[in-house]
Image (cartoon, rainbow, N blue to C red; front, side):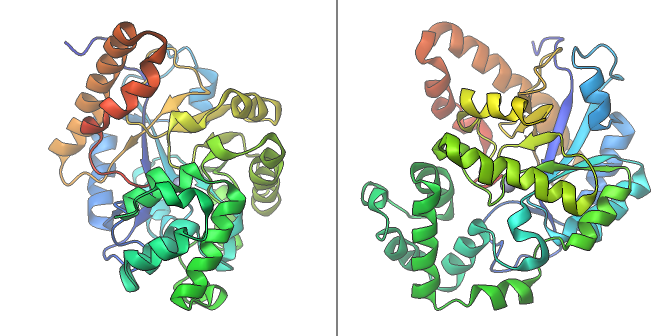
Length: 342
Ligand SMILES: [Zn+2]
């Protein structure tokens, strides 16, 4: 029923924390250290963790071990150095950490955490008021964090997002420099260097965590190239993979894919939780976004749902013709659960 062709499994995690803070509560991307350790135990028992290099040298899938799995982390929370990396080392699991250089050393907050904080502390009305500072907001109903990340942010430019964030800081009375320092949410440069010196790899996640569909060609430099160069300078290692912020294939435009190839990237990761076929294109590797509560649900998330989504996509693409992919995504949300953030 599921077919034999599911090859490389990739998982993506974000923040490892026993508790939620106003900066993360409602974003559906934290996992407790206990659950993370259980997930590593499950992955090492039933799968073979591999390095990015293994994936790149065996793109056609034949050279990979049976049930190969690649573990990745997005957004560079400090918790990945403090909690995730030591556990990965304990279990012998290599990993790729995708980082936004703008937030290294906690000099500012990532937009998602700022929005999350204001929503939790001041309420969604403050978010809606700030959104009115941006022209495109007139057509968008913002009832939840998910609305902000999946509808509002993709519809505005990087410059408009800055206008919105400025309005948000003013309306909520936020001193972002001080707040970012005190919260200490993200990796420091030293933590990044230490990560890169172990069996881990650092990857590109854009400079300020943007939806790439809204980038002009001129913005690829400041968002993609600058991030790669900064991360390579700080970590002392080569950055050769890219993870799409928010994980959607809609953001992987033809122009962006060409730019990533030209600028020395060798792999691109999405987070649509669809099974990768054997011989998957390294510039279109999908990851399962998991916060599984048990081995059973993790098995379901890694083995069952991605295959069902792949079957659904194949069937729908066949019947929907050239309109397929866009339609397919909205139709497919029922399989994807609550995943406002990636
Ligand atoms: Zn991200």
